[in-house]
Image (cartoon, rainbow, N blue to C red; front, side):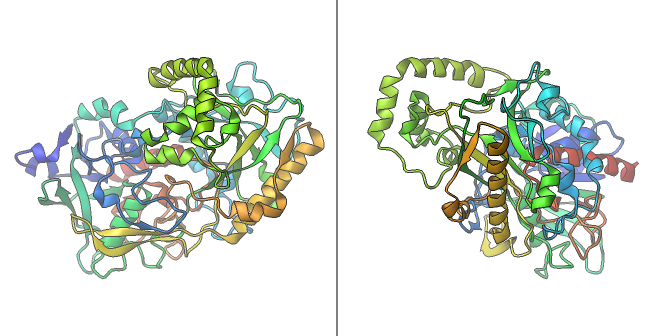
Length: 547
């Protein structure tokens, strides 16, 4: 059942005898609810958003240090959460991501890669992203080599792909299933603002929710799962302790080790006659995919690198020298895009925007190209069920900027805390203090040099970048705005983290966290697929607990 809480005359029957309460209706919360559908116990899913309500409510507003994006960007309130706007990129973590690497402080998961990998096939089903095969050779009929003259060797992996969801809005796809559920009740317009714990007790005794009208209710479920995202779940834990320390903060680690992904567009690949695969392709199971380059695990260990992915990128929208009518049109119309997508239009902070007149000249000279692009965009992006993920237009000089995503070293000083400023519901607003290790920049430099040297030694291709200015440029690479990782990190003991291997808060045995906040490290991969896989793993544990 799905109900708007404010529309109920009485909530007594709805909120009584609840075995499990899930706080948050994003991909983690909805996956949990769907997995628990049909069980013989009652499940409540609380979602603060309401139909027709603000997608980015005022309570998301807080403080963040530059270059971290504002706290209300890349987040959405509502049934389905941020899957309403995500791009759909699905990438699994790698086995090396779970290793304790001596050259990366605080690395290593307390569980093995296989503990998560076994849930990736079903997570891909939830995300509509096809089979658990992330190789071009195994996924694409007659797959050509990513770089035509590049031989197989031990340093650089070139046969890897990223798969893309529809992108699937979890709120739309799974609405009917949960609406018809006999034991799962999704309450919309129910924001959890506090967890209650009696003095001297370990367990959470109740949770306070506030309705859109301002009315407050208290629920007393047996188990609680915080699935409100990497920021809000942590905020709720920090705000719920009357002593100000936060629940689950016995070792002063709650909110710490906050990480995103370091990203940017840096260097360029010049093929010099080699054929390269640049465009989106379709897999055997009709899923859009893109090629990526990735340094092998052995080479990462040998050169003390962070896990990173490199993609051939389109030229800078703002630089009219690309000569594309379509790209100039998009750049000129950027004010019509949501803020998150506007940021994508200038990933190179050193790029200088061309005068408006030069973009208008591109448009005037390229009307036929623009018409073809518009028709393609309409049918493949707007009207198609499985949408083309984004625009890929090659540079007219034949070169390709290189986009990279890199994991960052977990730092205790990179953290989420609370301000004294209160929102309308009386919750303290969030304060994000994002920090990056200086060694991360050096590791990215080494990765690009290794990429350059490896390609030039065995291929026609060359990688070009200004090595003398690389530190300056890479230090400006900012965090990926929507990837909130690590603030309730999983560990084998309370001395090293906030949740145990089953995602239960160490000092609260009936409280769990389902979020990328539990990830000890972040890989280079977008977190959504692993969030869903971890939710599937948690669902299995919860069924055993409540059997």
